[in-house]
Length: 285
Image (tube, rainbow, N blue to C red; front, side, top):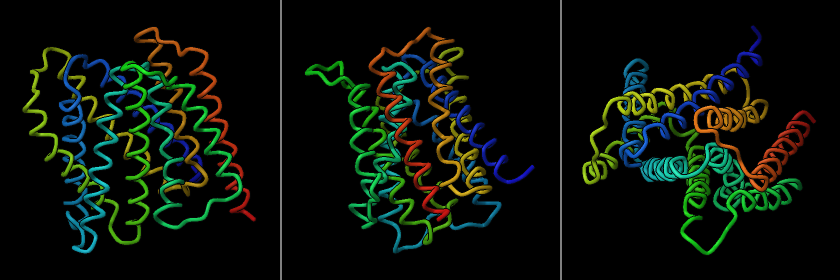
């Protein structure tokens, strides 16, 4: 099999895995969000530790990069916490769509902090995406908007975290970055989980373990996908997880997004596709 089809296949596996992770989070029911996040990161920690051990990669990186590694870890953790809260309180498709706004926030943060220049399509893209997000969130002056706000904040935190990953890409080994994030996440989540601990019962154990397993599968699917093809060629396939999340939401809970959410999602995904095609065209030129 050529490298490009392999990459697309791994992106497909990753998208399905993340949709199943989202399903596990929701099926776990009334287990506190912090506890769900802890289980998700515990599994990732053991996987990352095994990779570190096999490859003999430094666990905690270089001294001069500690503030960036810690910042990436805390921002990434915040993104996961907000995302899991959104999953618990929104329909699957909306939570997934809001979380997938993170690439657009990477664009904003990279422009502000890394001094990367915006091309002529990125500014109108950001405006259209903002409109699409508002159609999904449907802002109102009540606490009912909090879950959608959490979904948006998950994308903001993830975008900031990925911006720091971009900053660290030539400074630290990817395995070090993944381990550092998993380690910090577990250390922060343990006391928060103890404060609000609720003993899982029956199938909740399976769902919590499944959350970590599918999250790890999703991450490694992405890792192998980007190994076989450049991100510029395959990143758009990451949006498949929204479709799979919507399918799972309909099958398990009978969820259907309202027409405003559908319209907002179409705007966001269409904008992502146009930006993807435009950037690939200019790379080829």
